[in-house]
Length: 634
Image 1 (cartoon, rainbow, N blue to C red):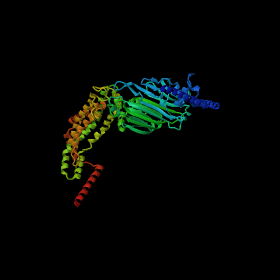
Image 2 (tube, rainbow, N blue to C red; image 1 turned 90 degrees about the vertical axis):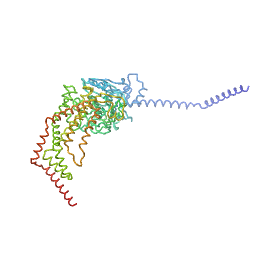
Image 3 (cartoon, helix red, strand yellow; image 1 turned 180 degrees about the vertical axis):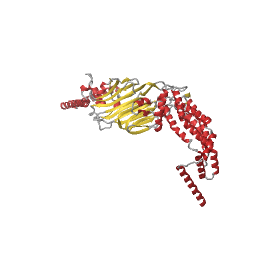
Image 4 (cartoon, rainbow, N blue to C red; image 1 turned 135 degrees about the vertical axis):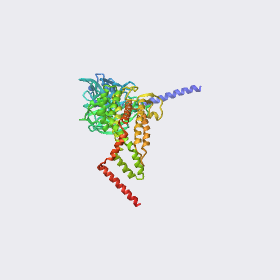
């Protein structure tokens, strides 16, 4: 009975609460004046929104300019304008994601978002896996112009939609990528692709954007690229991967294999060099400044196997009358000296032939000679013939060096006698030794100078073979690629220190070159040890030479294991030929008895001293007198 009563009370309570709420709502209902004010405020808000929409359209273009037919949704226009500002017009007309063109050398893809080259394939070449060579692909590039607009926004072209068109200019294919504000106002990237050419004409220009772009803000062109690996040894390829550039009307330089962060002045071109292939940007009017940066991406060659280095360039651009007008060129192609030199833009500096006399020897002697031999001989045989010719030309220097050593060997007993006789008088010992050299017509430096004369040739060839594009993927005997190492045995296990220095393979040509240099040094060093007198108080040169007999071949074996097999082939053949020449000189040309007899005749002849010799003799005699006077006073 109590439970039923409670239910009735609850129902009565709800009714009372509902009634109170209805009374309060009735009491607080708006008056007619308040209802009129609310309707007026609502109408004002609608008009304000419409005014904002009209102002946004007025800042870019009219509805007639932007709409595509009659189907354009005004809300979509407003949304695009909020996002892209004045460049919403391009977004409404862009359809495809990319534009594809090609010539006989290059297969190119242009991204309609950003308008830049998003893929560059070299059609004539493959990498060490027989896969196509791509200099640009899969977002390894970032090409962008950064600028401010008069509506206080900052724009990056890489994020904006470009409208493509492909036309013909004679035999040339023209790709125009336009970032439009309207049909008559735009920023254009214009690419002109010639038949059978690696060079692409590239123009950045604008029309009618002086009232859109804020010329008081900095405008920069940024070009970033990560270099793909193309060679069998990524560490060896990385050694020849860097940034090259031309500045101050013809001067060329490069960053080297190290990481670099530099600012340049008056730059004509900048090239991202990847050993045998390069990507370069060139300008007919030098950039006032450019900032370049490169970073090594290979910390562990067993893990970092895709990219070699990252490159970055930032170039401030100047507007002309509030508009872009930059005439540029883009090069994507091989570091082939003949191809690069044909452009007459100093691009052949991308081939690292060396500086000074070394570069001169490579450009004007070895490059033409090797090109001539390679025109009718397989490249392996061309290296051998070139080596023979070089050694024949250098044989007089080898002869003079060996003759000097033979003379020193003949007079060594007399030098030893002088050393013993004037053991306690170093000054007198030096005087008598120099007098003996003068009378005998012998110079201890005569054996060193010929060797020094060979150094420019040695270093020039050291630069030449790793940079010779013609050797790339050319085989000889067991070497599949004369521009890379000739492995006869490989393994996968990473051995600490050994793998990083020597590699995970054994190359045969460096072993042969090391054996040849060992026997060559045994011949030459043995002759020098037999002829070189030991000077008191001086290092034991004989012992040092003895160490060098073993040290040099070991260095050759380790250092050249990852180098181009063409270079090791040259040193192997060169040392074999030198050994042969020296054996002929020793056994059939030089007669030590005749040399000894001639030296004795020279000693009997009165030797006329030149001014320098007289001065040196006077100085030594004066020093000797001073020493004797000091001893007497003591």
